[in-house]
Length: 376
Ligand code: ADP
Image 1 (tube, rainbow, N blue to C red):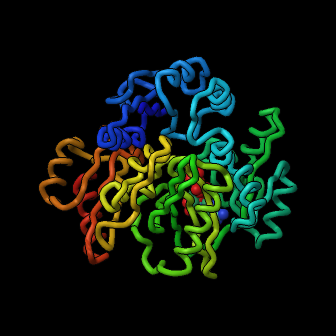
Image 2: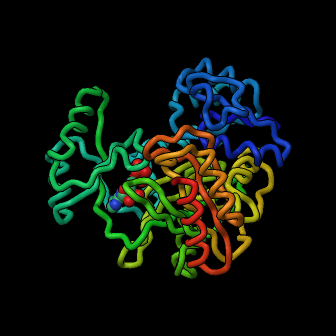
């Protein structure tokens, strides 16, 4: 069983130990030398070049992804060549384009923020006026970690995005959404096999700082009952409705009036699921490989009542990551410290820490303290 992963970042890297345990031969097409998944990268090349990707794909049984940026024409060329692409292009396009995603989820009757497709500043100003004077504008494609998302009170605040659409030539548009008054952000992770089996992990709470995920608490505190049931139902409906295969994360808002709304989809293992590597019977990277290979899926129950994951962003202000790593290990032997082998840069995700245990306060403390010791 050979799985080819397009993209050499930390998500591909964390599939490597899972592949070893499953007896799966994992190969990575990395964007450059020396990436996080370099250990399994037997090729380096451009994922937007059909020839490069086809040649890589011909060496494996199934192709999957570390990111969602492979262009549709390249994905279609793989399918036309008879290659198993999981998730396939018909599903992946909804993770690549936020406007398409909003349209499709609305058609499926799933709960989303009020939204519109806007092509002109007048349309945007009208939407803002109708929604209490503020709205969230998003570029449909290419955004990540909050880039391409802006809260605005007038169309002038995204003038350069309108200018970019005009230059683009293709009938471009922006996505505008109501500014959701949310209590907190949640994420529901699911996995689906091509033959139909779907499993869901417990609903988690995600904490973002400056548009970047900083902490995840599993399960989401005070989420037992209705909220957890709704989130799992919504995520399973999306996985089935869009024909997703592999792991998918659904980012959600819990509103102040107790509704659950879908924000975003990620059709691959996701930062909100890192806790599952150490906190659940089956971690998301193992599950992703099982799912894309159409193998039976593993249990999603937790080892302990609480798991808390804290991202390491940027790395140490002084001293090397390696020194910090040793310090964090020494002081926090019960925390699981993951190092992605990346050079620290401000704001860059270079690792994460997971702690598990019985008392939420203790687990939060341990995860944060170990992350701080690593981060410096
Ligand atoms: P990205 O694709 O860059 O991760 P998202 O669409 O997830 O962008 O938005 C990033 C963050 O912006 C979200 O985690 C949330 O905190 C905030 N946000 C996004 N959409 C809305 C909205 N409609 N209302 C309020 N906040 C929002």
